[in-house]
Image 1 (spheres, helix red, strand yellow):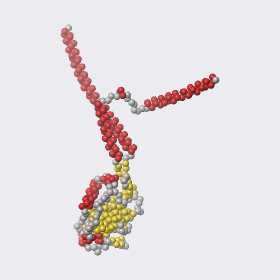
Image 2: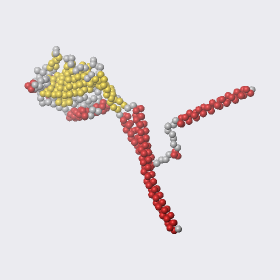
Image 3: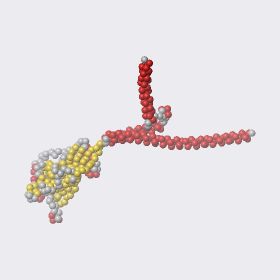
Length: 392
């Protein structure tokens, strides 16, 4: 019986010792964690609030709010990233979109494409529509707006990024059917699209309809009177590849007017394949740059050639990838913490430095006043002592 009682006491003692050891371990852990505290708390009884500190705090909070607000706009903004790589797609066809008005009757001119391999591309996708060369007032306003945008794009290249992101669609005024008879319409609008090989080529509009030829092709220009030649033209649209919103091509809105019947207009075009990927548009298209040249054909003066409009294009082997990018959320939070912490630390340092200099200057004034007061007291004391000595 005694042995069992002792065993029970030992078991109860060991069971009660475990909670004590756990409590001691927890206390040691909490003590260790407290010693690692990098943000010690100052008792409120030792904290003194001042008017200058409150003013600096108000200014700091105002700056924090303003910069955080501006940083939010930066976070919402996007930018375009440009990358370059080799274009490996040479087997597919290239779409050529055309909308040109020439100041000649439709039966007098012909348009086609001849590429570097002497392959003549069928122009079945082009339509010839008799129109007037002069524009209506609303069409002229749109044309002037387009020309103004072209001028701004030449000066401010970043404007194209804004157009990419906005995905602005060109909505030119529709050309209404004229009430005039076809015989009274002296201009021809050539519009439509062609599929050409991805090699250098020449799209041209010249006198006479084109006919096949063993060595290329020819135009029946002999049947057209020389007095009817007039290659004044307006390029409402010329693009390569898929038409995408937000892309204004360099030749859109170009207008050339000449008084010479024998006139050659040449456009040397370099096409750059482009992959566009924004939050609104994802497409593969082509951009291009252009160089213009024109001259009057005069065989007597040595200026030889054929009258017409010639667009010689070549395709670049490099592809441009345009991607719209956005600031990630973690970077925005890091920048926001940097703003808050930086302003808080900087204002604290400035407030401490200003307070130190103010205290130093005030201390000097106080020491000077103390010295003057001490000197006057010493003078009065000496005067009293001398007076007492005289009395004695």
